[in-house]
Image 1: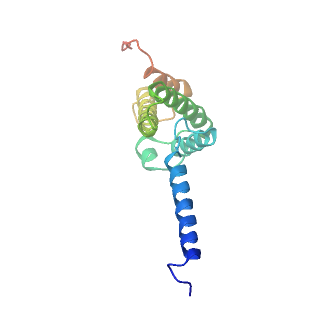
Image 2: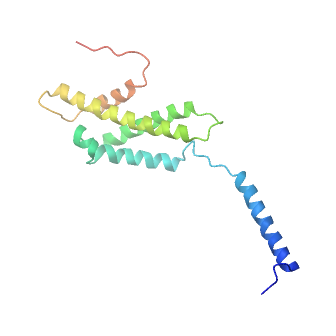
Image 3: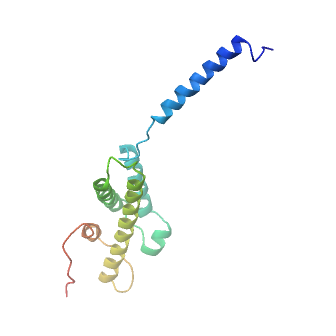
Length: 155
């Protein structure tokens, strides 16, 4: 075995320490950018929204499912609006975690608002129970949340 006091062991220890110091310096300069999400991530969110809206879930048991074509259009609208809201709040001084949380909350809120409005529109048109609502009612419900004007009830 080599003597720990030998010049070979000292050179090896010095080389190892230099490698550790170099690696630590690189890691200190390493940054992770989580905002804005990649197109691939946004597409995954969109696909998950379509799946959630159009298939059996806890949400659909209460509010009903949305036909796949309609769910696709509504999901795109929800994701785009949620992204716009979150992106408008983004500051380059932030690490993006708060913005990512805002994006997620906006998607959840808009999805719930959409299915609730769809259910309300269906029950208004058919007082005997929930029914299929047309896509105009859903898009109107989602769009109303972005409108700065107040909506008056029609008599």
